[in-house]
Every structure is written in C-alpha cells, then in structure tokens.
Image (cartoon, rainbow, N blue to C red):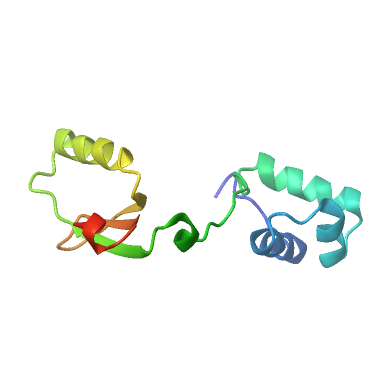
Length: 123
C-alpha cells in the first residue's frame, strides 16, 4: 500500500513507552529505547507528522470524579437512513455520560460506553 508507515523495532518500543508513560521526558524515552535524545525526538516528530501519534492525554479515575457506575449500552435504531443515523450521532455527542460510541454489526447497531454517578443516574 502506497504511503504506508514503516516501523522498526525501535519505533515499536518507543510507541509502547509513550503509551505506558505519556509524561516521560524525551531524555527518559531516549534512555528506555537506547537512543540519543536528538534521535528519539526526531522519531517522535516523524511519528507525529505521519499521523501515528495523534495526541497525548490523561487517564482519569472515574470514582474520583464521582462516576461510580460504568455501563455498556447496546442500541438498535428503528431506521437506518442517513437522517436517522445523523440524528442519533448528533444526540450521542451531546451526552456527557458517553465516553465512546462504537458501530456494530449484527442485531445491534451501536455500543455506548457510559459512566454515571450511580444506578439512579443511569436510568
């Protein structure tokens, strides 16, 4: 496939390290993958420019945010035309409780991953 990103073992190790510890400094990453800091930075910049690394974020503890209930909700749409799908997607994007929405195949159309305070708020 033209334009396909090529990875070597060092790229894979670097990606694993950045996923494990996104707050690691470039110097720390370089040491972990046996590169000089400048070579490590060049690789990171290449992986970013090629769209392999698309951002950095924090993992949050839901219970500390008083979100004690995690649920997966299966959704089946009555209609499958563009208007119905668009309306569903627009609605879901407005729900703070939904952290992910996955399209499915089979008897259900979507799987929502939600966090809420408790069972009462889930209803």
